[in-house]
Every structure is written in C-alpha cells, then in structure tokens.
Length: 581
Image (spheres, one colour):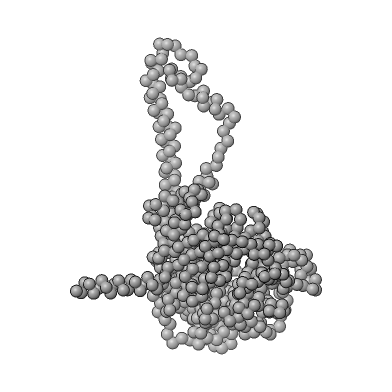
C-alpha cells in the first residue's frame, strides 16, 4: 500500500467502513510510515473537533411550510400563493434570475468559504501542535545518556549523579509530596531500607551512538487471531506448538471471563472446561502461571479484595490470601478503598508476589508454593510494580518515598525474595511510574519511565539498568506506559507509550538501538495491553482495542533485522566489486 491509498483509507477506517482485510493492510502500512501515522492522528482529532462543534439542531415544527412559502413560483418569480398581474410577469423574469444567482452566492458560496477557511485553520493548528508533542518513530531524538550513581562518602547519604552526553540539562523538578498517610512505627529489620548505596565508579563511560529514536524501515505483519466484534478477548498466552490460551468475555457488558483455547491461526476455538465458571478481571487479576496450568485472579467473594488461584485441569479454586482474623472486613468497613490483596505476579518457582495496603500504605507481600504469606516490604514508602527475576530469587519494584524536605524520591529497588537486602539500582526520577522488567539472563533491567513534570520529559522512555556495572543507559524517549517486556532471546523489548501505543525496540549487543517498530496503529482504548512473546522472539501475541472497538487478540510477526542487515551488507559488497571490475 502506498501513502496516497493509505490516506484514502484513513477516513473510511475512522467511519468503520473498512473490511477486516483492508484494516490489516492499513495497519501494516502504518507500522512503517510515520507520515501516515500522523495523518491518522490528525484525522481523528478533526473528527472529534467536528463532533464537539457540529451539534445537531432540531428544526421548528413548521419548518417545511416556511421553506415552501419562500420558494418562487416557476412561472411568476413570486412566492407561492402571491397574486401576480399578467403584464408584470415579464418585468420580474430577469430580476428573478439575478436574485437567484445572488441567493446562490449568499446562501451557499459564502458560508462554504467560511467553513473551508475554518477547517484549514483547524487542521493546520492541530498539525503544528502534533509536531510539538513527543517523539514519533522516524523523528530525530535526543542524545542517549549513560548514568552512574556514586556515593561521595560511605554513609553520608549524599548521592551524586554523573551523565555522559553532549548536553548536560539541569536536574528535573520534583513533584510536591502526596498527602501523608498514617504509617505505624516500624523497627528497622528484614525488609527495611538502607539509604547508603555504594557503587564503584567506572573508569570510563561508554559512548553510545545517536539512535534514541530511529526510523523503522521494516514491515510488521499483523494477523487477527480472535477478533469477535461482540465479546472481548484478552490475556493471550502461547501454550505449545499450536495452542493459544486466552480469556473471553462471558456475555456482553459483563466483567466475567471464561478460559478458551484456539489454534495458532485462530480458526478453531473452544472453551476450556475448567474455565466455565467466569473469572473477574479486576485489580491486576487474570495472570497465568509460568506453565499456564493455573491462573491467579482478584475477587471480592468474601467482601474484601483477595487473591484466588484456579487450576485449569479441574477448575478447583484456592483462596491464597484468606483472612481468618476479621481484620480485612474491618478495614473495608472503615475504608471502602482498602486493598487487602491485589495485583498478583507469578514467579518461575510457582510463588506469587502481590500488593497490599494493610499496613497503611502500599507494600509488597509474597505467597510461597505451599500457600504461606510473608512480608517483602513494610516501609513508609509506596512500593509497586513488582517483577520477579528469571530464576525466581529476586524482586525488582518501584519505590516512591516522600521525604521530610518535601521532595519525592522515585527509584527502582531490587530485594531478595525473603525481603532481605533491598538496594536502589537507579537514581531518582521525577516519574509518575517506573515499570521494571528483567532481561532473560537476570543481569539487566529494562525500565519504562513515565514523566511527572514537563521539565522531566527528557527522562521519559525506556532505560536499561546494568546491574553488574551499576550504570543506566537511555534507549529512547518513547515510552511512559505501563508495559515493558523482554523477548526470550533478549534482543527485543516490547513496551507501550503514555497513550497506550505498543512498540518493539530492537537492542544491539552494545546496548544501542537497532530499530523501533510501532505495532498497534493507534492507542489502546483502555490504555492497557497484554503481551506474550513466542519462543522464537520473532512473534508476539497481544490484545488490543481500537477506539470504539471491542478488545481482540492479534499476532505480530516482526522482521528479521539481523538477516536484513546481512542482506544489505552482502549487496553492498557485491556492488562494490562490480564497480571495481
């Protein structure tokens, strides 16, 4: 598809008049064409502007009669019902045509010209505004930064940050602290925070080439797997050679989902017998275990938020956070927003970490394979976004702490699974969210950072944290969403931006960016996308809801960038030899 054809498709797409095949072709073109992506955004903004300003007006009851009374008689030039002398008809004939022409100019041409002028001004304004907003694939980016944390004196608590880049911007403005929360006095023991962070200074920071945002030149092929226009389908996982598990809405408008399976091409789907009871999807629930034999979900079955685990083989469910003391119900009665247990995350060893507010703020707890609960963090800070290391022995998480001087310190921490030895592995960012994801080797973290202050926009995006060398590398200023996930071979990172658009970033061995491919042509309607990589790291499953559409499951086939580069190099060598001869 060429750009001219894609631009013709865009308005039909927004009106819902494209077939599924036509939508697929348009998506593939948008994945490699920043210009048409911008056209789609402008067209959607224009549609929204027209919807807001062009309000339908109800005509008066006698509108038809009033109009008909103003229509000239074809033989006289006077309004219907007007008496005309025979000798006056010729005199008014010429004037009738002149007035008709004038009426056409006044009633049609002038208003049309005004409308055209306003539309052009509106389009130019929105186009210029979109140019000033964040980076899009294909636009030049800022210089990458390598950062290193250094403590000047052990134990003095003063931390110094050094950057290597061509520009040295000022420290971003920090957000004012949130309202204080009542936190019980907690002794400093296992799981407490040690503010002294020791790092060895590197002798030399590595120079990274300018590729924070690069132009995607390869095509991503999108294939619909389950795209029912009535019922939502979500949380897909690849389970074997030709089996995909997913959750399907039980009935339209109901927040209950059943477990289904389908073939790789989505042609043969059936309900898994154990999933027929209907699971709620709330507060981060609906999470598959590593072997996909169990699913953890959050429910209010006993009057408070608790985590249950269902076995897919027999459908048997177990309450993993049952409160036998009555405190959970008591807390909910005092505060309806209290969250006893939510946001479960599985480890490779079959353990679960989850979030809780039972100590007065957001902390992290864990459940072992036998169902025993233990505390991971219990501090005055807010600890969220937990992520297990590949071996299941460590947990990375986002820690946000309001200090006495009014500043908020936002960092990624890593702690052992028993709650011991918590350490900060990043500097503080003016970030509203920091979502970590472990590399397959367990030696690095990818962090999706969302900005909090406009002055901190330069920090938004995807960062790599090298745990062995205690350094950070910013890969791109695209990002700021809630998703980041490494591919199984460690060569790619799937992530979302602050609007819910899904991207895949190709990482080179020297920690520079090879390509950034946009996967979804538009932002997700709910801002939340679930992703699962296939074992070959060349395909990924994801759920996506276009604006106004129903959530469905898609498969993205990524380009083999290494093969394309090898072809380019071979072609260049052959051309050089030919010229020499």
